[in-house]
Amino acid sequence: MKRLRTIDLTFGAVFVCLMAIGANITVWFPFLALPIGGATVPLSLQTFFATIAGLMLGKRLGAISMITYILVGMAGVPVFAQMKAGPMQLISPTGGFIISFIVVAFFTGLIAERSSKPSVPKYGLAAAIGLAFNYGIGVTYMYAAMNTWLELTISYSVAWSSMIPFLVKDIGLAFLAALFMVSLVKRVPSRWLSTVKAS
Amino acid sequence: MNNALIIGQYVPGESLVHRLDPRTKITVIFFFVFIVFLANSVVSYSVLVIFALLSMFITRIPIRFILKGLTPVWFLIVFTFILHLIVTNKGTVLMDLFGFSIYSGALIQGFAISIRFFLLILVTSLLTLTTTPIEITDAIEDMLHPLKKLRFPVHELALMMSISLRFIPTLMQETDKISKAQASRGVDFRTGPLKERIRAVVPLLVPLFVSAFKRAEELAMAMEARGYQGGEGRTKLRELKLRKRDVMILLLFIAVVAVLLVTRNY
Image (tube, rainbow over all chains, first blue to last red; front, side, top):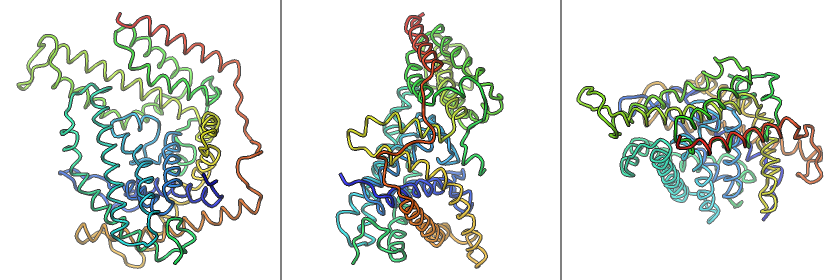
């Protein structure tokens, strides 16, 4: 396995900071609070940023960066959604979504590395696969947490249907991530993009 | 807010818990999370509650800091308790409430789960309340050391943690600046359909990403100019050292686990 260069380290670290900002984006941009089912849900761009991390950094560094993000949050720095932190965030029913970011970044990175031409369909596909892992792991974890340590017997389908409103929002965001990535690729020097070969 | 970003939830202090090696604290708390699930009786739960409350008092952290850590999950505890009252039907019917029968078994189970929840939150938050993020980073680097054999970049991971600790406040200020800059140019996010407003995020995020990567690149150059070349042969400013008190606490914790195992089912 290739050793990480210094620049890989700093890019990975900067993505941890970006994740912290994305998770709490409504602090700066309050207009991003969404009305879902009557209540206003502050939008979190965590999945969006995790997807970009994979697309920009590639599968290995993207996943390592997300592991770092989780560890920083566990160390008590409020980087998770709604400025939360601490190991409890991972144990609680929604902890699976946080853990899934590692897998999200890995698989979006895997697809981004496959072909070097940046395009909306390619990034869209990567984002969609990332989102599938995000919810697959997140909801399964929630279902398992509910049924084991909270000892609430709920069915798998109930767990899924409770997340559908959020899924709709995140499908939109996944598409936005693809659009964003294409516009980013045009604006930054190619040496910053380890998944895009200089053309 | 900035303060919270750098020191996390840490509350400075000189207590025994504060002075313990972070590795000891992480080890105890890691295993505590699992043994909580072994408790299944009044006595065994009491053992854990006494252990948790004692640890809490030893830290001498003002109660209000601990309560602050509990607030976000408070709702979840109450919610779980109520859900248990509604869903579980074990034992005898205690009373009828708005057409729902409250069973004695539900009350007991709901209470037990709430205690379990409370214990998990209290003990895990004691770690972040008494340990700085930097100490935890050092401890993680040391504890993950065996993974180096599997070619996992442990040193690099710890360094990335330290770098991000330093840059999180900086980039958050940057975000603030960008949002103000775009607003002063007349970008309006407050009106218009939701779809438009969400698309308006792109012109905000592009400068944020670009400035973040610029910083990353500059930092990498600065590090290399100063001769950074990875973890090999690097010495540490802060050395972790296991002391007598750490061994004592670990032995005490093993004793707690033993008592818990004995008092199960009582």
